[in-house]
Image 1 (cartoon, protein in one colour):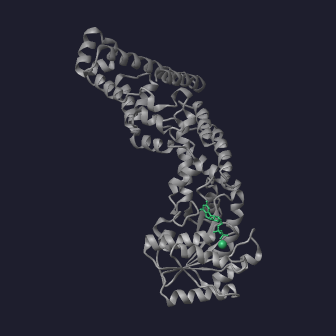
Image 2 (cartoon, rainbow, N blue to C red):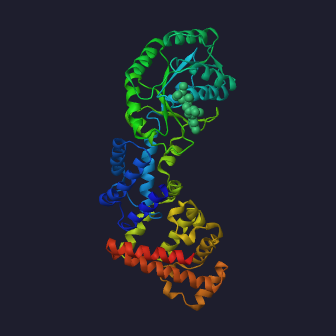
Image 3 (cartoon, helix red, strand yellow):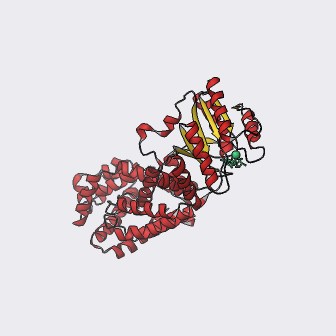
Length: 460
Ligand code: GDP
Ligand code: MG
């Protein structure tokens, strides 16, 4: 599905190459697709809508980077916006750092719907704090409704060598919580993790209970445990719990399966509360802190296009490019310009790396097996050497390069005469295209680009 998104974006943007900046109309067209795919990744409707609006703002009028396809550039803009949404709004007072501060005890209350993974996450979090932060952690179950729920936590905790509050029959929720706090203080635990009861849907008694708990126990952290597979309903869950509890963060579970993580965006949008941990399996060690960049990649599923664009952005010398563009508009494209283009490609890691970073769907059938293709990155070096062996005058007026000069250049670059001829031919083809492109209307340009792409592919 996401490979398809990549493909569709490429198709869209093939039509707008050569315009210099990303235009509103073209971006709208591409973002309509992005929107559909965000919805398919379980991002709630209003969230997707707002995200798209933001992305549009960021993309309109942005200068098209020369060394990559504009479609890739929009993917990067989408990605950056996802990261911004997922990252803590104020890194200086990171909620995770606050959570990592032990107290005597630091109380963490886990809330969420039934089956969202609260009990599992309680033990996972205890394990995490014990192992990574060398903390002393006590867990306690406040689920008095489901039969054996308290025992379930105790057994799971014991398996992982985590201390749990001894179960006392027929005690009320607030009484158990008070007992847990007393025990944690007395036995100097750094953390007390409270595993609360859930319901199948958000209901009033559940909310009243967690509200009373919060008021009485005053936990430093109230974390929502959200099922990564919960889809569009995640937005309602997040809203309801946040209104009642003023959540400090969330844990998203089941990220090991088909979950694409769209719920994380709904959470952020509705509560502005940060996603702190991801659960990726039933085992106790399957809990990780959130890396916004990785999560954005998971939600977007765009292979490594993003890192490819980052590289291109790093190396793109804007001034140089602007100068080249200006000259192109006057119909000037010399061997020096050609060399600059080649170098830019080389800086991006060579053809093999560029191709290997694109999602599979983008590559035509005959290019699937990159490993077996005869892609020789030393070609760049050879071409560079050939141009270096030319005089300034030759680079500006290649038509003066006749047999005698060709031999001299070949010798100087340590290549054959055929290599020099090939380079000159390649240059002339590119120059012709560049000159045409400078005069062309966008539609013709698009056709031309497609033809060029076909040629390049045949060459491989
Ligand atoms: P609770 O009702 O909220 O306490 O949910 P539980 O902790 O009892 O979890 C419900 C089910 O989800 C159990 O079978 C867990 O093993 C499973 N589960 C919890 N977290 C994860 C996770 O991150 N990945 C997977 N695959 N399963 C999980
Ligand atoms: Mg439970």
